[in-house]
Image 1: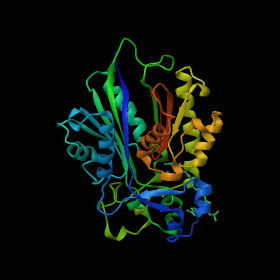
Image 2: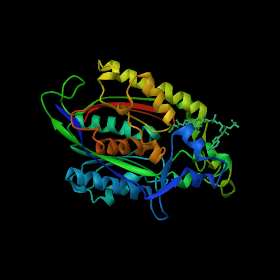
Image 3: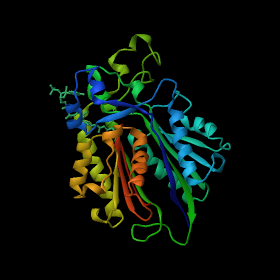
Image 4: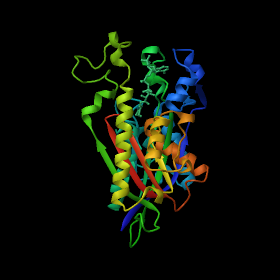
Amino acid sequence: MFFAQIRAVGCALPPYIVTNDELATHMDTSDTWIRERSGIVERRRVADGVGTSHLAIEASQQALQQAGLKGEDLDLILASTLSPDYYFPGIGVQIQHGLGCRNIPAIDLRAQCSGFSWGLATADAFMRTGRYKRVLLVGAEIHSRILELSNRNRNFSVLFGDGAGAAILETQTGEEVPTAQNCIRGLIDHEMGTDGSCAEMLYLRRPGNAGEPTFQDLGEVRSEASLAHMDGQQVFKHAVTRMCAVMETLLTRNGLRPADLDLVIPHQANLRITEMLRRKFDLPEEKVVSNIHKYGNTTAATLPLCMVDAQADGRLAPGKLVATVTFGAGFTWGANLLRW
Ligand code: UT7
């Protein structure tokens, strides 16, 4: 039997820290509002000249180094971002080249904040066939360049930050695969879902190909259509409902009670969402990872950034039973169960 195990994680964070006070110099907001409504204290911003693929490559190199591997040892890349360097091709091919990999497949996976969760599920499915042995999964985002620091976009632009995270997965073989009940380390189960009827509740319309005569129009550059749009309250409600439901599904299917989990890694969109999830499952604070205060919402990079942090503080240690849970634009949602 083949199954997947996470062998190492890595991250890349631009050094520049954007404080809430700095944002308040550009729009009518305040440190108090941002902290109270979202839990965010600061986030990172890349310098000019840095691309999303650069962050992705840096995070991947760190993960490879942790695993004692080189780019040439990989046989599949899965890359998730909503903020690629180019409209096409995606960043997967740039990662393949930047890491000096062989001519392996590099798949771009678009699922926004659920990208890394779906990437774990996709990697697991490929690896269980025995076809791919060493898989790199990356989530990388540069949000800062699509954020307009203005009053009209303030409900969106204070929430997001730049960063990247990566994981190296390695195929293991054995008589048994990991389950919630045995102690075998590896990926156990996944759940994914979408509701495309809500696509326009959180989206960036232009430039694009939704039917306008041109892909991009100079006159639109400062129009509402070229700003990311979010119906914050609706997104919030759906996030809480879907994240709780997908977690419930994963627990029930695997015969688990919430208390059986050693750690929960939720997508970091809003501290209030994480808290509602934590209370719903009656989990103590130390069992639910939260780093939104440092990085804001980093979309596809969030789960691996949480993994790096939780590994550093000792909560993510070999043998721990872990659930991830995500929700994002689409709407998309996901959950993964794994033994670290
Ligand atoms: O990762 C993908 C998933 N994303 C999410 O899950 C995000 C979900 N949504 C949220 O996190 C929250 O809805 C927000 C943090 C975006 C907003 O919090 P809220 O408690 O839902 O606030 P609200 O939208 O109801 O706005 C309350 C007030 C409004 O003013 P009025 O109408 O009461 O006068 C807004 O105009 O806060 C105002 N406001 C702001 N004030 C200061 C909106 N943004 C800001 C801001 N600073 N940045």
